[in-house]
Image (cartoon, rainbow, N blue to C red; front, side, top):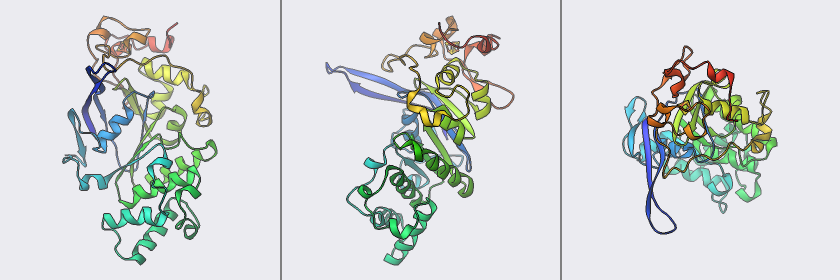
Length: 331
Ligand code: SF4
């Protein structure tokens, strides 16, 4: 879990001046074995930075990362074994020079799960079967350049599994794949979660695939986690104006899952804020039709609803929740 974590980066602009990017601000996410949480938001909303903090690729600026209820130790092999990232682009995340046997075998050897050639071969074949690259004997001696994008992403998932993690973090794992095989990869991730008890964080900008795969949805806007809860509650009855905008802008107006094929055609949502000088208070206030003085002053506390859904929005603290259902977007 990430508990109230923030991440600030120092960058230099074109004139060489230092600036601080407030990429993630007081965000939290909790993962549980056998369950999928979708982290949804536009690009630049801090989803990947939050995942990288969970994987301890980035140290947190404040807050803490917890594993099995305990504060995670500083990044190290023990932690990395448990939390594995699957990247968006399988082409660049795998060494194209080596055969699958070597790519997976090296991970097994480094982590002490296989020692002899026979052990490596047996376990690599088993991993290929687990990710449905069959017949495994055919794929074990292929090189990445001989494989399709979907097959490569399965090798990337197998490589993550070779470490024997308890948590997978999938950073837009289907967005660069051909639409015809996106569903297969989602089904594979769902099965790994369900049958093998892995916890999965599925990072996406696509509501339809999130709905297809996940148990819970969590929404990020400009580095802040603004809403979360059971997927049907969040998608059918969003409690934050940004979530409502995201859903209304999805190419899946009937919310049936059609957007899984059309996710690159989502409507333009307007400009997210510059995170070197983000708006005070609720960062959504410049785009929000409900913005009031409190919104510019402070980020609202979490309001929790009966079914476990929650949101950070002043509307609920001012008894104006019903307005969300009447009007949804800025004219
Ligand atoms: Fe943010 Fe205020 Fe709009 Fe709620 S009403 S989303 S707190 S600007």
